[in-house]
Amino acid sequence: MNFSKRLQEFIKLEAGSGVVLLFVLAIALIIANSPLYSYYLAFIDLPIQIRVGTFNLEKSALLWVNEFLMAIFFMLLALEIKREIAEGELSNRSQLSLPVIAAVGGIAIPGLIYYVFNYGNSVTVLGWPIPTTTDIAFVLCVVALLGDRVPTNLKVFVVALSIVDDILAIIIIGAIYTSSLSIAALGLATAGILTLILLNRLGVKRVAPYMLIGIFIWVGVLESKIHATIAGVIIGMLIPLRTKDGTSYSPLRRLERMLHPWVAYFILPTFVFFNGGIPFKGFTISGLFLPVPLGIMLGLFVGKSIGVFTVSWLVIKSGLARLPSGSNWPQLFAVSTLTGIGFTMSLFLSALAFNGTLYEDTSRQGVIVGSILSTILGVSIFIIVGKKRRTKNHNHSAITEVPTKAESQS
Image 1 (cartoon, rainbow, N blue to C red):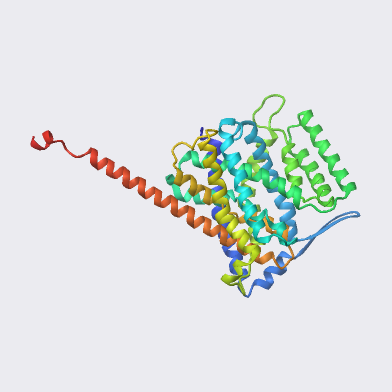
Image 2 (tube, one colour):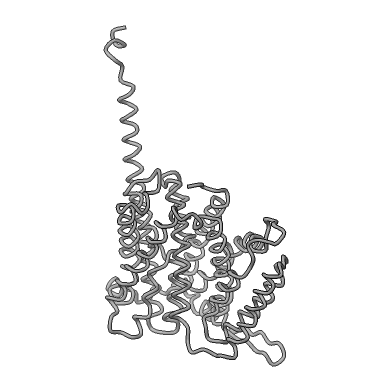
């Protein structure tokens, strides 16, 4: 696999973002479990209104973060996915089969585990997607801290897997977390989409027209009762990757390069701060064994590792793909375990599934505990494997340096 400069930049930026997210999560948790919690709740529930003539849009600060800022995050995901499919890690079919099929296993098994624990409850069963996602920023943060213990091609594998994971998460959000539709608003959104297609066909290079029409589409999708993050996906997919005159710096590339730092260091940390304030008052270990948190915790910790690794093993043994070069089976299992770090995306799905219900806090507790357990196990395996390999290499070097009988006598 070609470890391109663009991919190296992506991993470096996402790893840095993971450190920031961890810091912000710690702050949110401290506030939520201190006397400042009432002020925190008042802040995230603060109403924010936008009014233009007769048009009025009012939401709490929390919903603005979850529906507007996260739409920008999903737009960036769509930009990255489009570029990767066209010319990146997902453009090579020989490299694509392993992360694609492994990602499917990493969604199916955790979802099934959650479903088993919540079968028969029509409310909680809707949370089955929560343990199916991977927070690539946190994963790459851990990978960066592990250094050369993680082979380069295994890093490429986890990035490609996370991209496929994001595609499937987008489909799940659109299919499950959409309420009854407003046809009129959907018609307005459709008109905006057709305008974006026209701009694309005309070869418009400036980013501003795409963004102005994008805001119009976002409002239409929001008012249509489809989750607003889907608007971000649609907009991202309709921004041109290539220009008619063949210049490489297209609107997609400009927007991706401009948005990535903002998403990594502002939008995602803001989301984590607004959604990560989980009060642990009254929290007990036995509380984790309730169906919702237990399904999420085991889905992330057990389901992701088993799903990704088992499917990868089957695909490799069948000859459809090869083990990423420079890596071994324990390392593949370790990185499969790290995909159980759900954090941001799992918290987002938790908000969609249980916002305002009695399951909201317990579901988020399940996300935190499952992600922490996945981190501990994955890191431990990499450290143990790294020590064994260094010991083996050291012993091999020592053997090769033993003098021969002739050399001893001379």
